[in-house]
Length: 395
Image (cartoon, rainbow, N blue to C red):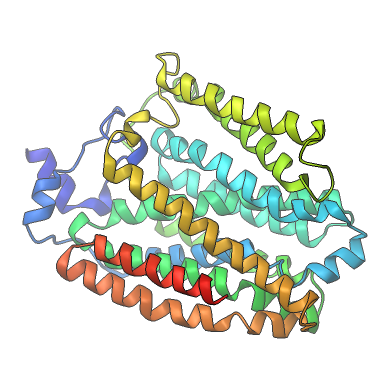
């Protein structure tokens, strides 16, 4: 109990385990949820804390912008790099690497600690931005976007983990809401920024602009982010704990399924072997992945099946999937519609999406305030999906 009180009162000095492996890693102490729910939390919020929070917010903004910034600059990129149907992989490579590597990055946070993993992925994101900005061919641009995606997905994940480490559960809602609001705003204004840059200078600055900001964030986090990691295992012992097979199965399956869906109907018929073979192999790989994670073979599964043991967790994951699908669908569809059908300029196409970003700010603020005051989230889910359904119907 003494260790639990210390963990709850001084989270800024601890590196508590993330949700994927809570309570299973050596050297970690699990804070008492009952204590956090019933006692007011006092935690350090000095200058270093606020520098870290600002740095996390800037990193989140960078990562979120790159999700959609290329949608309005796409015509200029297509023209200069002579890309055709492969251009879809400028977007897909980003999301495939982001989604498939996120579980691996989460596991690395548990094994190696948050600080060095976070610095690594910021450096990775900045490197990918440089490769994209200097791309001389479509293949080079796609490779850079894949590197960017790995860094972006890792930033979004580790920012939330670090916030959970720094802020007690009772006070966490406000900070998480702010980070999510920054993420949503970045995604929403990405097309506007991409269009404005493409018209004012060159599309390459859509990526080059990340270099000074990413470098500043890297230096700031290096000096201010100090999270204690209690696992003193040897480096090779930590490497052996990584679920390489599980991560490999997940990445290969994701790429195969997305490859089939990207070209089905547009390039190859749905009945073509070019579509069916990767689709079936990808789905089979997903089944094998689940079976492997359920078995006793991985020492530390990258995706513990206990995460899906509770009804609430399953519903939240399903809602997250559905919300992300709808959100990204219209963020990618509308810029294309505005430029190809309405013949808007890249700048005007991005400008037309600003109302969505503006509307998201009060929505996030109201949600954060109500969650902190009443601690009820079910009504927020109902209201959010009702508004989303209405908006999609009007579109």
